[in-house]
Image (cartoon, rainbow, N blue to C red; front, side, top):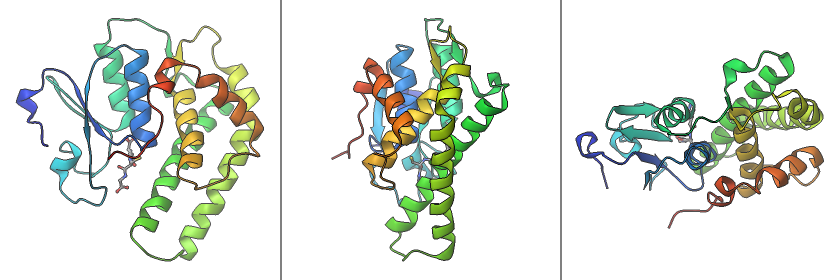
Length: 213
Ligand SMILES: N[C@@H](CCC(=O)N[C@@H](CS)C(=O)NCC(=O)O)C(=O)O
């Protein structure tokens, strides 16, 4: 189903229930109490930008609103914040001034992208190349860094925050690595403890990863 931009009165998130980038947007929408309809991208191998809400990068999530279309999860989350009638204290990437926080955000987003590349190359049907094996090493290194620094990261974030882009992305990354069986996560104790706490939020419970049917 394709939704023309002129017809959008309720915001539309284009994505997949199995996508970690999409889940970030949906968690933000739930936390910010922004209603939306969800348009599932059925074929991740489609080369038609229309299937991706018009995103020429052929990536999800995309947010369509009466104002326009938003590509990329950070843009989507920022627009959801502007649309919300609530005023929670949200910590954004540019607020992360301590190196441990800025580096954590960088590594979380990089790990998410590396994971996407590993999954997509598997979907493409090729065997593991030297570059893919390097990416797997990088992914493991990044997750070890995040495990070692998780306690400091969480203690350094502003204590009066309601929500942070860093925590939402970290949560979606860890749970997705498990869900897609890209990396066993049982030995990452600090990250698991963080996720167990984070997933008591209604926004996390409502957006559990699943494959769309
Ligand atoms: N920079 C984008 C990346 C989004 C992204 O990589 N999404 C994945 C799904 S989780 C995707 O669209 N993959 C399709 C592909 O790699 O071809 C963002 O911030 O939203």
